Amino acid sequence: MLRIGVLGCGRIGQVHARSLMRLDGVKLVAVADAFASSAEALAAKTGAEVRDTAAILASADIDAVILCTPTDTHYDLIHAAARAGKAIFCEKPVDMSADRIRDCIKVVEDHNVPFLTAFNRRFDPNFANVQARIRAGEIGEVEIVTILSRDPAPPPVSYIKSSGGIFRDMMIHDFDMARFLLGEEPVQVFAVGAALVDPTIGEAGDVDTAAVTLTTASGKICTISNSRRASYGYDQRIEVHGSKGMLRAENILENSVEVATDAGFRRAPAQNFFLERYESAYLSEMASFVKAVASGVSPAPSITDGLRAQLIADAATLSLAEGRPIRL
Image 1 (cartoon, rainbow, N blue to C red):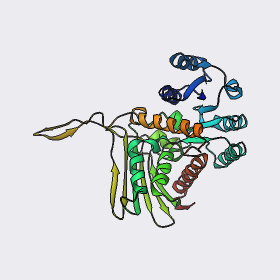
Image 2: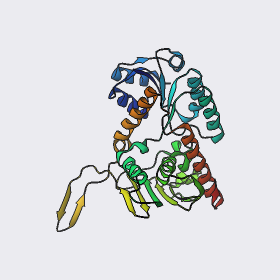
Image 3: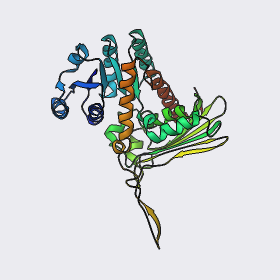
Image 4: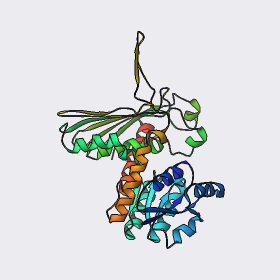
């Protein structure tokens, strides 16, 4: 039985706690949050104890921790958890600084603790199916990957100001997906962007509409399109073109019913919220972590995967600022 503590009882902490309650071979022992009411509410739903963060990290009856706290707390928590010998499941990004992530890698390796960076989209059944079929050679050699990722509406500008920018906050998921599908590391990044959705996002120093081209050493290409606005729902699509064919994963709709009248064909809108869209991915992600830790296998995506996505995000940010391709 793997015994787990959840640090951070906000929206994503609640998602992971629900996943833990659905899995065999795992027990949610304790939860902690800076706001006592949040911890108490989640404890009441799950039967877990409320403890403070330090107590969870020191507890002998906890084997692993789920880090759902703000990004600027990850560094210290990762160090403390690694030194306490706890397996670590960490929400993305690991940290806003690549150098600080390297420090985290060192402490994780020095103490030989399992670590998973929570890029949940790898665990989406359709995206995972595409990747498995690429690896099986179904479409031959990958040539071009296209990733479309658009949110229904932008977050508050107050969030934008502390998010690290669209490449580190939003597109970092797509950078990891690009690596997942390309099978090679990008060596060059070129980014363009503008504030077309909300001018106050531009005034805050960020963009809300962006496109990035990644190129690998062998010449494979990935194009990524992000927008903070999509009037038709949460837009999440991928397409992979190869030497023998193409694989595509479309949006998940609110339902699969199609109506045809003299006005044409009409389908349901795309699901509108990321927690709904990726519900199965969050469950599979947690199941993968639990299974890996229990069996002594290194979880994936690893902390190094977190670093590599962050380095691409940093390069995209620099590319946009300087208007030129950046070598990785």
